[in-house]
Amino acid sequence: MILAAAFAIFVVLAVSGTPIGLAMMGSGFAYLFITHQDPGLVVDQVMNSLYDSYLLIAVPLFIFVANMMGGGGVLDRLFALSAATLGRRRGGLAQANVATNLVFSGMSGSAVADAAGPGLVVARMMIASGGYTRGFAAATSAAAATIGPLVPPSIPMIFYALIANTSVAAMFLAGLVPACLMAASLIVAIRLLARRRNFPVMTNAPPMSVGLVLRALPALSLPVLLVTIIYAGVATPTEAAAVAAAYAVVLALVVERTSLASIYRAIVETVRAIATVGMIIVGAFVFNYMVADAGLPQVLAKVLAAWHPAPLLFLLALNVLFLVLASVLDAITMLLVLVPLLVPLAVSLGINPVQFGVVLILNMMIGLALPPHGLLLFVMHSLTEAPIGDIFREVIPLVASLLVVLAATTLIPAISLALPHALGY
Image (cartoon, rainbow, N blue to C red; front, side, top):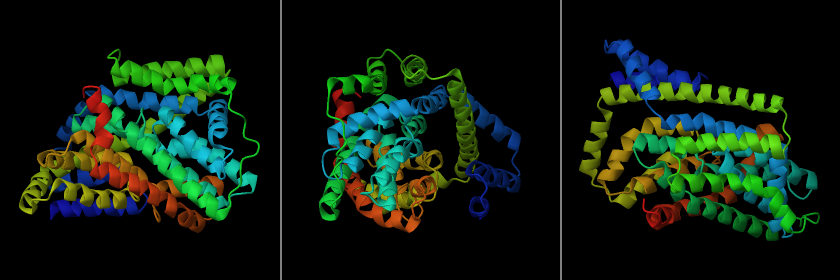
């Protein structure tokens, strides 16, 4: 009853518009008050957990990289390369949107950053071309942005690895094939729609050339640099994040000729973002303490033991749960609150924790583009002023193509595990 009352407090606070981190803290401290526990001890445990985590340092560094690489010059170079590759096909501009997001995701690690960065830029181009409805342009950018957190550096994967006590490098590798499949499935869906709806050909697409590749090479090199130094054992993911941040600054100053004022703005934006993320992390730690103290993990373990589900049935049930939750909850919140409960259950059923993490993150990303509450849909509605009903309608076939990838990744472990196993993880 006490735990139920605390959950009710959390729901009331969250629904009333309280920031999710404060809502979790409010319910957690209400539980401590009702159970007559000393909040000081919990605060001490939370702060120790927070400051003992070397891996968490990577998060603000990767957010800074995203802010630095989000400049117009970098996006222009990446889009020109995508347009040269795909633009001369029917619906090529929409396909280039997907390709640009796939490449840029290797710098941001955040679905919202991808939607607000390359997603917004290409959506405006699609609308200006006159061949696409505003709703379809916004829906394409929202769906394409779901790819980002499956490609290193992925902030959700860093959090999952931290919570599940698994390898960040293995998680980064495991997301690459599903990410490419997501991009391929979206491009196939767009091509089918292009034929039926007579989407335009991008007549002004630049021809493919060595110069075009060379201009995009500095930006394309960042994800390659990250993967190389992590898997060669040269640097930990946190050290790699620092290298990426330094690379982004050098690229901005030398190649893009960015002003020092722009770097300062990127730092300010990073501090604001990490303050929000930090509040969620602290709130989740307090919330998790409440859940653990009430014995909920043990209850779930007993229920699972009595149910005896097959591993596949367990994963399918979680797919439904996470798709629904991801449309109303922040991905980091879901990871911090639910993963500590679910990973031990998955491992007990013989599910590889790396595959489990990829399936969960894939669910959460698709949920962000799932009507009627998907966050990315409302982000693009706000940025493009497309009618929200039009975005809902246009995104359905695109989400359907992503659900096919989710089903394949759930049913075929090799999709996520082949690369980590090949490299010894």
